[in-house]
Image (cartoon, rainbow, N blue to C red):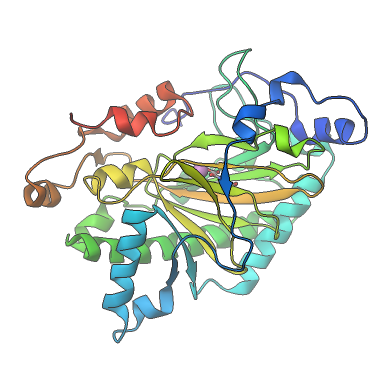
Length: 357
Ligand code: OGA
Ligand code: NI
């Protein structure tokens, strides 16, 4: 697959192995990981049990009695926050727990076993790191494992781990359940925007889906490093699941970082650049980052849902008509992806550059 595979990366050390060395010694971690200023930015932390971001109940969306109200709440979450959590999402517990367990098992393996799946230059799948384009660039305190999940015939099975033995199956089941949930949410977002749900879903035909599993090793100097640099997600909707109760996600709200408290059994969902553009700016693709814990590892899986390859990335015509203007440029999906990689992980830089002034 040649598409979207631009944006390869320079080789960088394995962070899990690095953490094993440095967490046991008194030595300062390598300079390329030290990001004191960024790590010291003010963060609003809610120590209670609240989640910081809105909570959407899928049962209420589906219940004719409460659907309208919950749909408005969903729309407003995407407008005000760009992030929300979903509860009563209908994904079988067993699908989630199998996937979580297998993902944890996978990262626990010795480095040699994981290296079998190392990323190949020019291909964004496999085990490694992304977006390292210069020898001077500061590095994230995390290792990644990326896979194309859908359409099913675009899977490259050489990257699909054969250990633990149930992993391929648990990824497959998780992928199809995630795609179902996201289609359901997209349908309600279409209703919220007042566009035809069927034609809106058609833009996501074949449910193109990729996954990034991220392993954030503990860091003795956690207050000096960043797990995942600030960025926006480029696709439609992202569904994020943490493998354990270690928190780390922070979102940029009104210029400040807000720590998200993932509820047990819920998914964190966010609007990506593509959806912000399709919605003509109604919904917001919010900058976010992940920080690391001093003594515990954190694992997350982000499943990104994209528009189909022949789609146009641009404001929906019905909305342009309604709003009296197109607030973003329109382009082919391929052109959009190329621009994203050229912009690197530059916060909201790419999506801002696509705005019509
Ligand atoms: C991502 C992402 C956040 C996290 O993978 O795009 O934002 O908490 N992950 O791991
Ligand atoms: Ni992200």
